[in-house]
Amino acid sequence: MANELSHGRILKVSGPLVVADLMSGSGMFELVRVGHGKLIGEIIKLIGDTASIQCYEETAGLSVGDPVQRTGAPLQVELGPGIMDNIFDGIQRPLETIADETKSVFIPRGITVNALDHTKKWNFTPSNEVKVGDIVAGGYIIGDVPENDMIMHKIMIPPNVRGRVKSFVSQGVYTLDDIIMVLVDPLDSSKTFNVYMVHKWPVRRPRPYVEKMSSNEPLLTGQRVLDTMFPTVLGGTCAIPGAFGCGKTCISQALSKYSNAKGIIYVGCGERGNEMAEVLKDFPELTVKQIQPDGSFKQVCIMQRTCLVANTSNMPVAAREASIYTGITLAEYYRDMGMNMAMMADSTSRWAEALREISGRLGEMPGDSGYPAYLGTRLAFFYERAGKVQCVGSPARTGSVTIVGAVSPPGGDFSDPVTSSTLTIVMVFWGLDKNLAKKKHFPSVNWNISFSKYERPLRQYYESRPEDDPSRNIPDMVTKFKKILAEEKSLQEIVQLVGKDSLGEEQKVTLEVARIIREDYLMQNGFSAWDYNCPMHKTTGMLQCMTTFYDLCQKAVASKFTWARIRRALHQQYVDITMLKQLSPALADEKMVNDSVARLLDDLETGFSDLLANRR
Image (cartoon, rainbow, N blue to C red; front, side):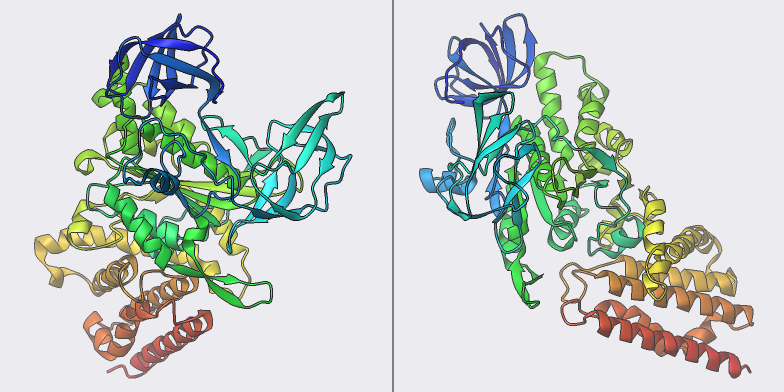
């Protein structure tokens, strides 16, 4: 990047858009350095020898005639050990390193620093599968580096490289600038290629894979409404649209904290800076249990599996697009190691607004609400980089990238172009409701408009569980929940017209059980000591107890019992069902939860048996 290839000159500056001439031979999306301050920019339009450049830094002070230096390379990220437990800006500049060097809270314009620490030494262990003389190609794992207590970083041959191994280092401590392998072209021994623990990859080019695979393994989030009512899979695509204050960021952060993904790439795209500050404050205080080689457990900080890409609302607008592509490229890199990664984009609406501004300055024909006509194409190109794949190289392995994109429609209007375009692409829609949020019902996921298209593959996953595993019945229990909630919606209209007393006993049972589902299952207090996270065994137990209670109530009503009498006779069991959520995930292990659920199920069966036996 430092080598000067040629120069152009600035013709026009319009906000983040810079137009330069004398740019013949440039390529689309080529990285350039703009002005005497060498601001980072990217070519987004070429007409003759004139190039339109999207500048990722503040353009104040640029003048007509200032130089534009071409680099001959696209915008690319540096991939290697040291990505996790780090925070970058939208073009992968490490914010902590910049702060240490400049002693300032602001990023100086034109500053150039290595994305990763090239002075830090890493303990490299070569793979036993690769020997001198072997022919290797892109994706071959040639060694391991313990990045931290949670991530074993796999060192891979870059995807666009192949050759015969000429030399290979032994186990030892190396920096990112040390050569660990030399490859030679089998057809021309004079051509060699040095392999390091780090390589670069263009952010706009998806990393290669053998094939995409269908996934049926659930992405567990720790949120009951998401894990069961509208579940997603590892490698799925999800959208979280909602108005301001509905809890989009809280859901994204909860997924980052408690999901079963191996690693998290959290992209703050155009959102407020205090949200990223909250992540930086909260995440280091959270730990997870990590099993050790001796079988013991160790509490490990979750920041060790998290990488933050921060492009907040006070940073240059154009860099929002770069932050999205930077985040997905980092996620794909870890996917190629065979990991299940999750990428949180908060929010894609801010990226769309950046596209709208640049499109307007380019003079393009606007589409709906002023957004560019290619908005849907850009969104689809981003979301299609998610999925479960068979990775290239050896040994054979699979990995996945799950994308969860928050959408911020103005005023919660889901007919907004960004929301409507996203809904045609994603497979899971978690629609947040402003009215639920006003009632302090969180997560404010509206069960009447949300959906998941992964229910069929997940049904196959749960039905493949052992016969004695209660989670086998999760799809059927969830179907029953949805039926109860749908019936409640229609019954509420009747109640508002003629009152509750006009309902039959079966309908009264439906209303009461629906209230339990809403208030004690779908609602989840993320700030409580017992409900901040709900493991799957606890979720399954709550499903079992509530569906069993509903079935037994309906059976009792069919035997001419009223709801009022059922409630009086089984008051304690009713209270116990509503208190199930207070089993703390930190204190109650799976066996303790299963024992509590089994006791409650027995109490329900006994209580209803006594009720039917004492018919009077």
